[in-house]
Amino acid sequence: MVGLGWAGRSIWLPRLREHPGYEVAALVDPDPAIRAELDSTGPVAVFAHPDQLSRHDVDLAVVAVPNHLHCPIAAGLLQAGIPVFVEKPVCLSTAEADRLAAAERAGGAVLLAGSAACLRADLRALYALAGQLGTLRHVDVSWVRAHGVPDAGGWFTRRDLAGGGALVDLGWHLLDAVVPLAGPGGFVEAVGTISGDFVADAAWGAVWRQPAGAATRSGGDVEDTARAFLVSAGGVSVSLRASWASHEPLDATVIRVEGSAGSAELHCTFGFSPNRRPASSLSWTRAGTTTPVDVATEPVGTEYRRQLDELPGLLRDPDRHGLALAQARSTIAAIERIYDSARSRQPANAHPAQFAVAP
Image (cartoon, rainbow, N blue to C red):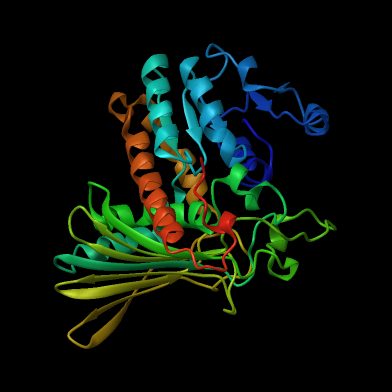
């Protein structure tokens, strides 16, 4: 486990420790205080840097470090021959995607990517229903939080460290969820706008991501909301909204799929926020009649355990080399185009950093 911040400690380490298919062999974090704390948790090797890991001692490195370190750390591990599972965003530019692809080829180890949303039971039910909608024409997808700016004032809201705001964070999940509906080939068109109405106000922070008693911070130079319109290579249009904060009462994820033979709509809440819809709901509309469809509402985070169930099989599959990186490159290319579009429409009174694209 490389990186023991919020994602490492809250999402991955507990699930790795409880999963019968894994043994946590080493923990890596540059913070001496965190390493000292980890040293007291049991007989597991604790290191300051991933260079101290050996491919003879570990079968997989789970990388959950701050965004700007995903590429350099994953590339180093891959070149050392260590397979890598990296949290989203896999990379912050198409250039980084190309660097990771080269490292994967050089070291012979495979990169696997975090994409847990697609493993949700309710989203899988939507995919199955989409097969009955005829030719798919359009997808509306949104993840809108009521209060949920993560770690405001920290690395998460610094463009140079995070690569972007809500679009890179929530938007990556949404684009992953859209791929099975929009089809292969990526997006050939992408335009969008971004805004930052909430990021500077501590009242809109994600308090559930902070340690108990921690002071709520504010500030940053990234967007808290992104809105975009994309067209896939197969001609499916996609309307996307990703918001860390809004005036809505609950955090909600909504995906609506329109086809030649009907439409389907899923209402749920992605992620771990406690301010969520109480249950998932799925419906199918055809010729003016809407029919509810049974769908499971699972415990929060079940999709992440399901992803760990799948990783060993993916590691053994020789055909997996290059696949995750090809998808990651397609996703970050769409995000780059949205940011480029937003920057080209920068209003005269906007702060320049709000519209800058990560290097």
